[in-house]
Each structure stands twice: as C-alpha cells, then as structure tokens.
Amino acid sequence: MRTRVYVDGYNLFYACLKGSPYKWLNVYSLVDTLLPRNDIDKLRYFTARVSARPHDPDQPQRQQTYLRALATSPNVEVHFGHFLTHEVTMPDAAAWKAGHYRAARVMKTEEKGSDVNLATFLLMDAFDDLYDVAVIISNDSDLKEPIAQIRNRFGKKVVLFGSKTTRISGALKPLAHFIRQFGPNALAGAQFPTQLEDSVGVFRKPASW
Image (cartoon, rainbow, N blue to C red; front, side):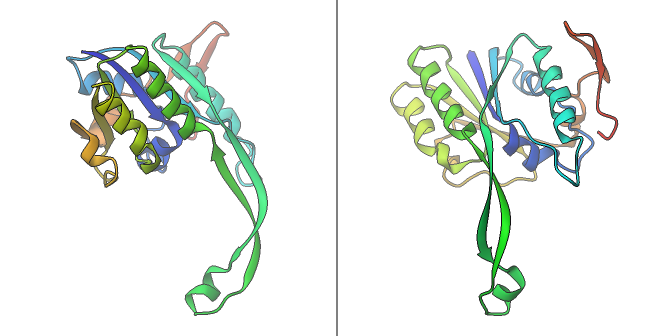
C-alpha cells in the first residue's frame, strides 16, 4: 500500500533515543524494515534547529551532522519549526512540594511549529491522495483531530509507531488501525553507517554518539 511517514523528531528523540547509543538512527530504514510490505515513497521529518547552550556548545553541530545523514536518503524531507526561548515566572518546585508558593525566574524553551507542520502535511497529502497508509511517529495528543480527519473523511489507514517503553497516547490509540512498537534491537539494526558521504564531502557519526 502507498505509505507516507510523518516523524515528530523531538518526540522520537526524547521517547526513544535520548541516553541511548542509537541516536544515529536511519528512521526510514527502521520503518521500511518493520513494514516490509508497504511501499514507502516519502518520510517527512519535523524538527527545529537547536542553539548552543553553555552546558552543551556542540549541540547544533551534532544536529546538523544528523540532518546531513537524513538527507542522504532521497525519500526523506525535513521540515523546520523554531525554538522560542524567553524568561518566565514559575513556581519553585521544592516550595511547591512543601505546600508553599515561591516564585522563580527561569528560562523556558519551547519548540514551535513542528506539530502544526506535521498536521498540515498529514492533511494536505491525504487531500491530494498521495498515500493509502500514514505512519505517524509521535505521541502528541494534539494530533487527535487531524488523524481522525484523515481516517474518517479521507478513508486513510493509520499506523502509530513508538517505543515499547512508551505508553501510546490514550487520545491517539483508538484512531489507529495498527500499532507497531519497537525495541532496542530494531533501533540497533537501523543505524546509519559510521561514515557517510554527500555532495559536500565525507562526514562521520558524532563521536559522543
């Protein structure tokens, strides 16, 4: 069946990859291996560019290297949102747990646009009849209504992909025709080669990964 894959990059990272040795993940290969009977013509990967942090100045370089790796697949298209960092007042956690309120000024960083972009392309591609099956790698309950629309209005099949260690969203689960959860072995088997080459030249997996 004609299949398109929609990946919430940060949801995938924090649910499956953070703290693991599998960050050099070829997402297309992962899905293609686990759904061998599906004809996957495009994978849309939604993310935002990170900035250097005092505790992690190399973070943008690692991300850019990974985006280069994704781009070596002609079937992958990356879509960018953005990060918004601003100072806000929030309750101090220790005081809150003790039953008191004490304000603290903190820097809050939020990713903006990726969920909306994913929902937009999910609906646009359904409207243009570009797929029969949508594979969605996200556990964001905000996608409930777009997924309901592609299923009920456009008659598309919905597959939810996620880690075996992550509970599938209760809002999304009833909308899925099929749920495919994967473990460390699947992630280990879908890694990019340590060294890759693109039009710019040869590059390697980040050393800390």
